[in-house]
Length: 306
Image (cartoon, rainbow, N blue to C red; front, side, top):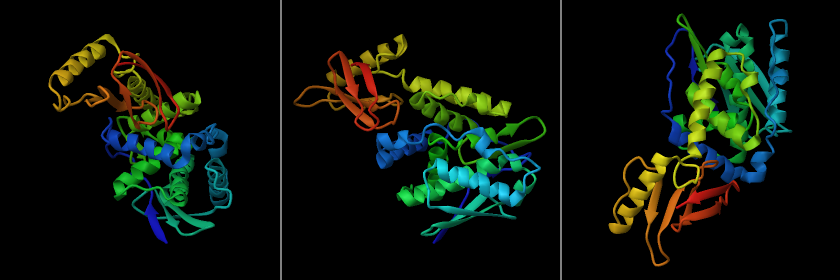
């Protein structure tokens, strides 16, 4: 048995980190989900958890309400034989869960959720996702990377939009749950939205969460506009053509820093590799003009101009 601390808890008044400092790990986490669950397995998590399933009012009994929301998380994450027992105590983190063999799992939430009940669903989404990943045998090395995997999985599988909605920030106070920044949560939710044709923005009760989602969505859309994808803009295509000529004229030269593609020469001709904009698995296609490729992991069909 192991005890896993929950997502980082930024209490009222503490500064919130913004931007995309964990983007590489987030993308690796999305790839890992597709590899472990398969494309069809990921699609089982549609639609997202409904706001009503996580609703928690001040009039609800604390323990009965927490058990009700935990059961909704279990159903959504397809853990039919897992029983969550929820308690509250003073702790540094937002929550923790005992990862035993099951079927019972003991979740403890920070005592402050006794009076911040609207965010109990967000904290539980992280903890129950820990149980899912434990059962799947999916983990990253190191506490930080594993917590980022958990946040990413919770958001991508339809329960973690609550973690972004728990983000609130103004001139006098701030609060955030999870290891991802608000914008990174927005990025993962936008990635999910593009696959499932689902818009989570009407569910946000926090204006700051909506703003972070918009910023994350802009980056997610740019993933599908990087060369050699045909949707790349003029500047990207021009840079790509210049780098392609350089690679062919200087065989074996390292790719320029910061570009999302790599050229490889060989007996069969030149190929270019790049990350699938959906699952981020590396794809290799011939360098021969217009090419249509299909990602073998997430089945996304990609129009390329190589």
